Image 1 (cartoon, rainbow, N blue to C red):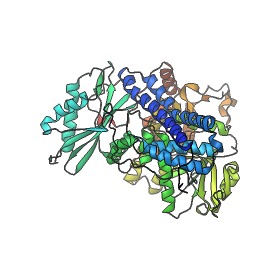
Image 2 (image 1 turned 45 degrees about the vertical axis):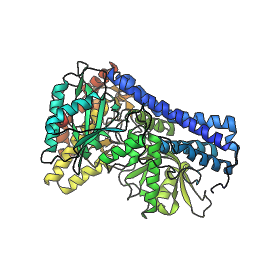
Image 3 (image 1 turned 135 degrees about the vertical axis):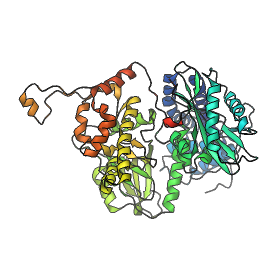
Image 4 (image 1 turned 30 degrees about the vertical axis):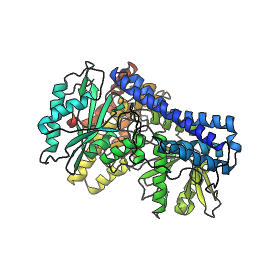
Length: 601
């Protein structure tokens, strides 16, 4: 109900206290993101990784601080709803000229739902839809750079000069190895991409003002415009082995940018006064990418969750299919369901785990937190985590309800919490991930089509090679998948193989990679049982083959490209490298995009 009068004396002070809490959060978030530039210049890779992990916790810490302040100063939990309705109106007023109003709304939701103890997304009080527009929002602070800059080369021949100017504006306090060489190579790539296009009067290059920092890289992101053509562009900047900067590659087009901003990669650090302006620009480069995923990529995960849920509710209103048990082999730890018309899957932790699984709910949750905080190197799907999620009961198949009641009854409530006469399925805790095609099902589709079919054979070979590449890139990032069966990996729309089953994941450095001992006698040799001692973190790579390589065609491709994965020395070598402090490079683009012979360190 809309309050007719603003007569609660404490309402404005509460709204201001909440806005103070949000402003403190974003100031700290932005300051940490801005420091990424200095860490990049100093090649402080460990510092960069630590900052990326620590920044993830900022939001929840600030929400807790704000809740504690409101309880201490205003006894917020005892205030009647009419006062809170006035608080919301005052808060909307405070957002009118704010540079991050969409984030401030989400912060309001987070704080009030903790205080009022309501079901999060079925409460008319919170911001279910945005109250303040972010269209054409820009900072007027002279200390803030504009969201993007535009450069106007007079012709293709003037491109080198324009690119020099563009790079100079980045103001990186580090010498370049050979900027003239890199500019020449970049100019040639741009000219190649523009070949056949008429340069119109609006020919320009637009570039976001802040670099995008992640791991060892800094990425310049923009687009080239001529006439009605807009060509997305990204330029990775890395340190060479000698510690000098190189323009390492040139990425063009929507697909290249999707790879850079993949949901399977770690979050960027970007210095943004107006996040919505950056999101709008990035959306113009990747119109198929949901805004929720772009906010996630920028490290604004709570906003990503808010937008995802709004998209989900919108989809529910405009669809009629039912949630179902997800197709594929059922897991022993997670119960997975989906909505066929919606490109995500929903995962519940089961209440009990059959042998040989030895784990707990808390341990599984810790594995998902590990993945959230770790560098996912494009090979581990990001997850959204929700509590007390309500779904319409009529959208759940009876078979799915029975499945949840059997395997995860502690997570399920069916009731009419809102009192509107509609039964709801309320799930206590759920993970949500992008739907992928399970690799075992993908391979089976290839087999069913027949490997005498050139397309099916090529898809099979590519996916097996990608599977091995995925494991090797996870290893490079100090991750051992644990359960390496095909069913625990999925294939993306672009054909990339991604890992998504995290309950057995471990740091590589915590594992002991051993060779299978030689049999002591003939009885050992003939035994079908493991006769040697196996510790809790022992791994025997030589034993992977029987579980993975039963199909002759798969075995042939795997052994041709990834036979080293069956050798203990491969794993031991990477473990030693990581323990010595060396971070391996995993680039979010193909080798063909590189500008020169690989000089990056």
